[in-house]
Length: 171
Image 1 (tube, rainbow, N blue to C red):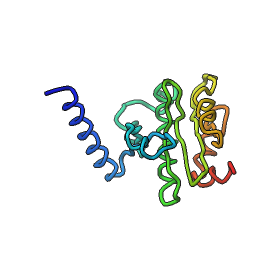
Image 2 (cartoon, rainbow, N blue to C red):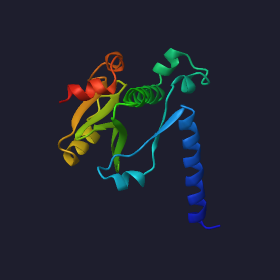
Image 3 (spheres, rainbow, N blue to C red):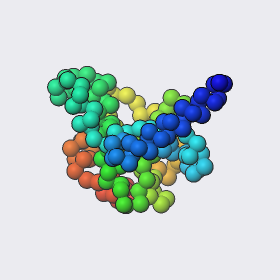
Image 4 (spheres, rainbow, N blue to C red):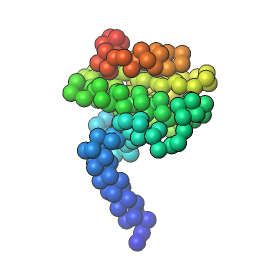
């Protein structure tokens, strides 16, 4: 069996698993934002769990242990924000994406019509420059930017409103 044959079978299997997990409301495959529909369909999705209890319940870690491990806490917070975005976007006409260009990325991109909102989730103590947001905005100049968490909208405030609210705030 050639590598290409195996890879095609693997992709088909993963797409089938994604379909089953989405149908069960456990996971969602967030498509990559390209600006062009045809290129979005050709990209691998970013999987986002829809209930963070699935991540935490079997870990054997306490809440404070999660918070004290920056990499784990970052994944948990980003997953929670992603789940909130996906759940609150349902039925609103708002689409949720992610964006990556080489090593520059934006955690989430929300689009409704011509409105485009790039969301970056900052859960840790690190004060990193927002290279991905700057790169995204240089490619999509009409996009608005929203930072969630440290140095932006506090997590509890962000989670108090659906994505429709935040899309309205950027106009």
